[in-house]
Image: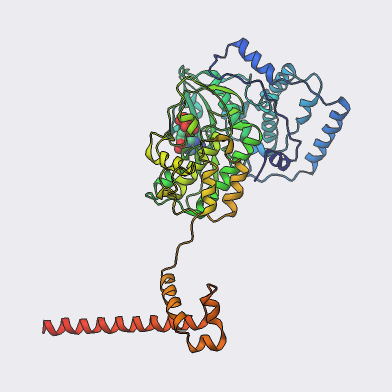
Length: 502
Ligand SMILES: Nc1ncnc2c1ncn2[C@@H]1O[C@H](COP(=O)(O)OP(=O)(O)OP(=O)(O)O)[C@@H](O)[C@H]1O
């Protein structure tokens, strides 16, 4: 699993700190005063002494000198970030940061205009510095301006890739560079600027993780004022939902499920380590980049992402992935954001990958399939619901520890990963001739063969160990006899048919 620490280490830089603000209620309007107030909550006091800061600055420069050149396919944001020390300088704050942003904005204007990954090393450096801004590090507010862009002049916007409650995603080509990208639009005036800015910031901040969709720098607004938008890498294949639906309720199989979950759990562990909860995990928000082997899988859609312990108002309609406590909530009821809602959704996605369908429509006792599961979980009914029968003991444990209404009992993403990576998820299926072997086994117990008495192997077989050689011989003789008899019967029936025709 790649933790945030490891990602930053991979980038050869010191891990940034993310200030945890006081809970923010998300439905508030973001007036300029409110924006400043929220920003101040993220604007912690620097603790590092000046001498330490200078030393650290040298360290970063040394690391940069020793850093291997990137290859062309790597994302620009995986560069080491050279302005790391700016956050440590006493007195660094809004003013300092905005100066820095301004300086680099002038130099980076070309790329923020075209809004695709920068290509040259200088551009990479600029992009990296901007990503390193305090605004991004501090988590969820930015005061960078939203730039107006004439969409048609810059992009050729093509087909719609998907749509959601808050906006829609379109495939586009950047005219100048010919890059294919995905543009996420948020219609105005329905979308509050705060919501757009928050989603952009979380998407951009989380981008360095290899299993999270890349979001390119810049917040934009169409010149006709109809939508806000930002730009992401384009996934040329499908979402997990489409991949599973294509199996016709067969599921994608144990091996592919393990691959998907290794990627998804790595991303979610990364978020949870940063005290962020995705809150909208579903198969539609897991993108599969590779059609055949599930080797590149990324999580997307950070529109509902919030810090742990934030108080939010419940505005959702219930979906298949919602945990029991959410299904019992009424609209406008206040909720405290908790990592365990992601764990429940992961349990549902696991079932969906393996079986090709959902375990229930709604996690409420009014829904019979869920009620049956809960009865079994609470030991009120000893019979496990049939749909869980194919799963191994370990997989059942995973369900018990994710799809439990007692949210404090739910596993962490790390526990889930350990179980999913190491354990067998399905009960072993009996081979077709296993029953036959049992038949031979019982019959031979009363009639030990010469071979079994001479070398003692049959005693091992009869005691329930590996099949004895004598029995195997006997089994193959019987198989030969059956096949000879069947061939003879086929020949006889052919003769009978031809005699009748004559
Ligand atoms: N980068 C991308 N490349 C290709 N397709 C994408 C990309 N991002 C999203 N999609 C498709 O668009 C759909 C909607 O995207 P997304 O979930 O980001 O929108 P949303 O409005 O936030 O939806 P929701 O209702 O889940 O909040 C996804 O399910 C996916 O199929």
